[in-house]
Length: 439
Image 1 (tube, rainbow, N blue to C red):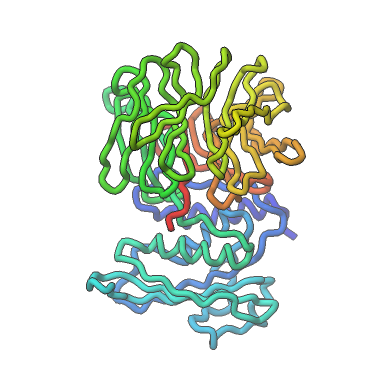
Image 2: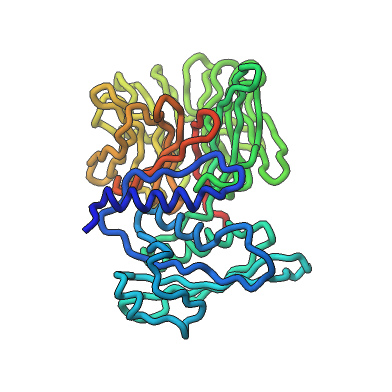
């Protein structure tokens, strides 16, 4: 019987092989921990009826997605007893003999859109092997450059069918990369990529630091802090057009933008009146409303899911802790008490869990606090973890840390059962932000 650590080692090798073909991928994936009893799934190589080889291994990407979730253990292709391409070819007893719980088969063929452009169509079926029943029968059509989108869609469907939780493999992330050019000058890049690190694209390159990138709720814009004007200023940028707009130009600190759930406002930190405080900026009118007014430092705002409250970091109790202010009543409530430092708070989508940067015994970790019971769970084990960002399904979070002296991104499930790293092939990476769903 293989131990969980042996499983991780062998499955991580499979994942590294599957992502090795990523074109210009800056981030690779190293799984460091998985759940004890992942569901065994056979992902049969998808048939292809077109001419020439496909530029992407779609089934391999699906396997990598599901493996990365920690909830699945893909069966190696060499262990498969058959390669069915249709439901009529599925022999459940053969798959049960391998201990397979789920079976995914599919076929890819060339397709034309309504506009006459070329693309691909994937028809796929998911089976419950023990129950000998079909669970999914789906198809998806993509453009000629959309094979990875096709794979992530299939992964999302399989994940939801098995776990009951919406998949997040089709979402994106943005992050800041810092790298020295040939002259030794530090260059900052704001990048967008798939959440598996593939297909990185440059949003902005700057000689000056870039901080605190944040997605708009519709996933069409990002806000961030840039020092290009000689002091920190908040910008927003349209992703489709790359159009940029400077939103603040106050003296002192302009930082930590956080979009409201309706996308019409930004909660920000300003020190224009001498002390860092939380403000709300109406984007269309530029109207500014002050939220906090305290002699302490108030910073790092984020919104409650209903948009009726602001969560923020403050040292008004002597050391940095997390507070929540209800906007209508003005009531302020302290949320964290465990540890001598809690900061950079993010709420899970269901509003039940608060994720923070927590310090205990001088070590910074990412921690999750149950807001109903107050229980705090340390999720990470490295010594300098920061900038947590939560997947829109609440299953995983990503954060920045250091590994072998280099800034990298890492991810962990909210129950701490699954962990993986995304080291960069180039410079240090930091400040991750997980996108919302693209509906």
